Image 1 (cartoon, protein in one colour):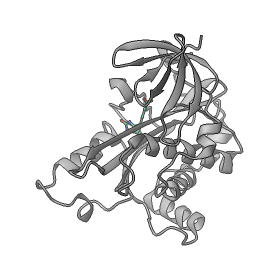
Image 2 (cartoon, rainbow, N blue to C red):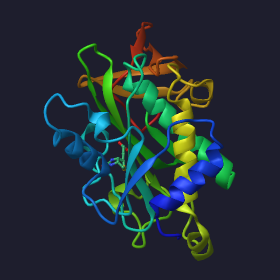
Image 3 (cartoon, rainbow, N blue to C red):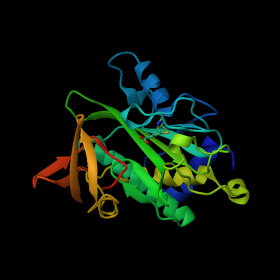
Image 4 (cartoon, rainbow, N blue to C red):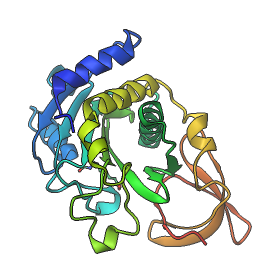
Length: 276
Ligand code: BTN
């Protein structure tokens, strides 16, 4: 694989962007880190209290690592991030006043990865509400959005952490993940040799930055979500519900027709993997 390079990412970004967007990525590259989301948070916390984050860490800063020793997922789960087989990064942005809802930003990130994969590899990924992308029935992208509300209850900042399995880890996924986790490419020496992660990341960043000033979830996300019309078991505030997903709404939540006939709007919680 082409080595990761901040300069190359910026070069590919500029080729793709053609001066459409003012925002450019500032990539901070690590060979190894505990977690790119944690690193971003650390940088913010180091700032003197009350200081404007973005006058110290430019909007569009991307923390990128070839390897994470403590990658994190939603619900306190770990995210396996082995060396040389994926892309693990966190994008720091200052969401506009309309973005009170990190859910919408998470949906933008999913659409951005889906578009980049389609554009560069001609592969169509499926989206599973809210933060997972699947290929051939297995999860290969996880997204973890973290942020903080400001006094005016809009988001003060958003850290969008994205992890993508490009290749299977050399020793395979551990037993407990092998039925769930997959990779974009099966183990293929030629593909691995030629894959350009810099160009891929540049394309994701371009799509994500172009979606940022939208305050609604793209139709593409809503239409193509694999949960639509499925019977699911979901957990919200430690309570389990059974129901059928009727629609994904513009704010990223979804509506479920529960077994008792009532309709529930779900904007947090977890959908159990097993469809009923
Ligand atoms: C999930 O599947 O629940 C979300 C996984 C998010 C993983 C990415 S990898 C880059 C960034 N750093 C982390 O520690 N987590 C996110």
